Length: 257
Image 1: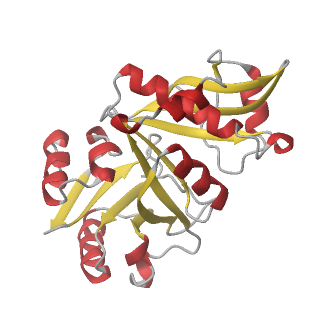
Image 2 (image 1 turned 90 degrees about the vertical axis):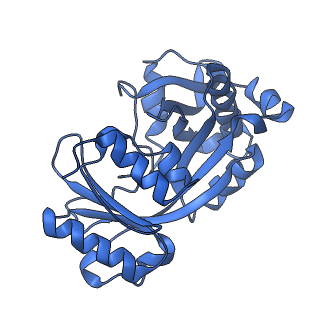
């Protein structure tokens, strides 16, 4: 098992230089074990409650990816797998989950924040961190997984109409320093009005003001509305992935590793 987690992350980054997943989305503290094969890498991490061991493998060659997963699986049993979507479909059956989440990582560099983003941001405000309206609104989202009370959240942005909250988004900070947008949701009766764009833009502006070098987010790859929203703000899709529990207990943890 890997003991020097900081060096473990650096080893992964050396194998895949400029990979945004490794540069911005991986916390060295979470790395349990790793294996590499040239520019193909894989590592394991445990959920915070230590109930599941997830393996993430990066690289587009399914045979090389499978070999890395077998090496990890020979050291400790694997509960879930995340892989490049391009490789996942041809992985051996042992590494393909019955149900998977097909998702993508999006990124916006701080130096690409435009006047338009700042204008959209002005339409949203920063909410109290424990505003009870937030969780009530997030009940309308099928993909939200972070709610008020989460220790990872540093701020929420919202659009209010009178006393009613009609759009919300939260921000976390990754160990890398990247800002991470989560739980973006608009009230069903107020969609298509630019409110999701406003809350995301407000968090982008706040994060960049705090010194975050990039802002990242995850979304279901097939979410056409989300794709249009984030593209309009200036995010670009870094890569697509598939994640799934090899023996699902409940729903798929799309954002697992």
